[in-house]
Image 1 (cartoon, helix red, strand yellow):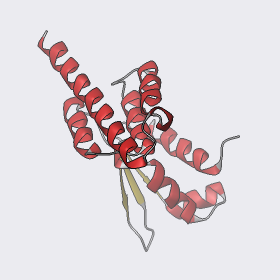
Image 2 (tube, one colour):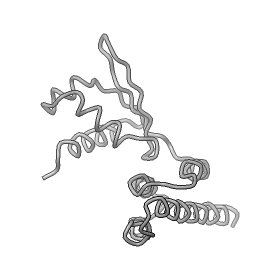
Image 3 (spheres, one colour):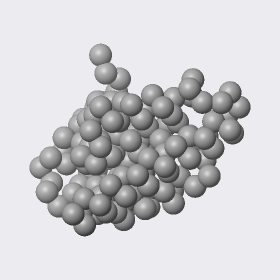
Length: 159
């Protein structure tokens, strides 16, 4: 059975299916009442599951009927991939890497098979033991893969 955070995340993602413009406004308290949980649980889901690396921008307004606006960012593939390379920097955690790969899969930039292969390649058990080295090697792998995607798209576009 899915936990409450998963249920809230899936509920919000389903709401996006009815929002072709990719912008969703929700009331934190109404959603908390719907799920019979504290508003902080809604905040937790938004801050951990609807992040920039997962392709979302969250804006919150508090007070007098405050709302939360979630924008699903559209992918201009080249710009998105270049932004990801910049975001990765010199090191990246396993959870951030996994979120990026899931977003690439959700947007059909990579296949589910490719996502699984890449997740296996960057798994902590396949990388150096020292966490700092592991995050650095993971960043190099991720940047190499994304650079290859950019190169592939450039060649495909030029053909």
